[in-house]
Amino acid sequence: MKKLSILIALLMALPVILSFGIMKGLEKKIDREIKDEFEVSHYTHEGVEVSKELQQQMPSRVSNDNFFRLKSEGELLGYVYLNQAPSKTAEFDYLVIFDKDLAIARTKVLVYREEYGGEIGSRRWLRQFTGKSKAGELDNIAAISGATISVRSMKKAVKNILSSIEIMEQNSVL
Image (cartoon, rainbow, N blue to C red):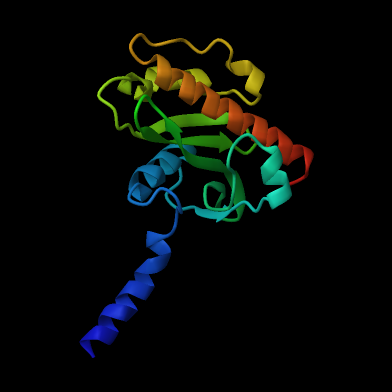
């Protein structure tokens, strides 16, 4: 009987545990960023389905476990993209929140795993991405001394997702 109770409890918790696929353990941070950005207390998310053929055309890995449509009370709020990018010897986890018009509303470095370069996680530096909706708009992102690799990596990652979004829009996925 005790084993059955534990199994039932685990099955009930499974949707929460798997709610944001690739970023296990970061759900609270992601949830807080989304609620803060859209000023809502409740929202739902659904993965955006992208065909394998279309995925092969996109520079970013986009699937229903890392690109989500966000809604509150049936109304579209925007989208969120979760992924990892390389730093000098490791990877960092980041998210990009888009408004309903697919312009960047917020970027956030969720976990940075290096001793140097963590400055890319500063709100001040990340604000440079806000409002951008095309990959070509990222040419004037400022450098950070001591974080060259991470700056380039974040800039490339954001350019790639913006290019991927353009492809999804052209193919009526969004």
